[in-house]
Length: 147
Image (cartoon, rainbow, N blue to C red):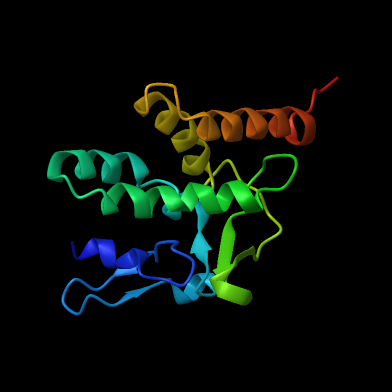
């Protein structure tokens, strides 16, 4: 339950670090106190399983909200940016970096799109649509052929 305090934020995105003694959650200074997409979007499988095991649905609901947010702010090409911030009206989330990555700080978010779809019995279409959109973005924006 102490780690779950990371989700107590205006947007619902989890902070990247939790002090287990005080319960205080924060993002890292070196990252401009931004949320890292790969961190925020790679806890859902575990929290969904924990919700099922404990009967505490809040674990699943709060962690799944991350993908609801990402689905709303993902650019048309489906490629996520590495960093996000809370701000604007009603704790809205916005992109704060201009870099998409399939390396550190981004890769796991794409992996979890597909894993969540599989974990959900291949019935939760949002995750599959996000995956398909991102893979199309890879082919259209990032894939290059050498001569």
